[in-house]
Length: 128
Image (cartoon, rainbow, N blue to C red; front, side):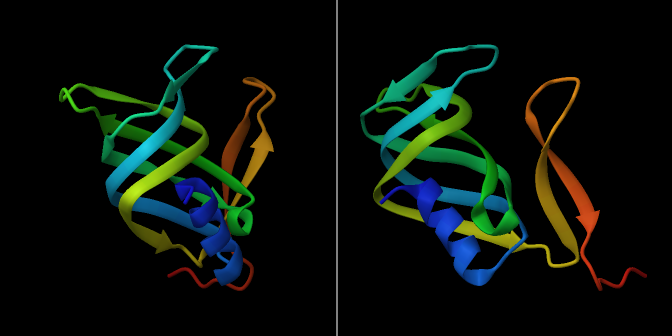
């Protein structure tokens, strides 16, 4: 299964407008990353251990920004922005924090040109 699609699908089914990945352990058999400052992608098709997975999921799974660090069989670690599938090999234990008092969205930032996270108070949410 694809971890990214599974997370987006879960958030859609649960109608989570804002969620954060707090931790994840598991393994992958394939992963596509954009490394820092790079335009091209790194395609990994090998046994990988998830060392870290962090990010935000917005708009009931329609928007997400995920970064991963994975270790290879030789112990080296590579990480970056997930772009595309992250195929689970055996398991992925994800702790997902739902944040119902907030609404996350992705909006184009005029300075960067990228879809950036915008955080707003959810309609009807009470703040003390």
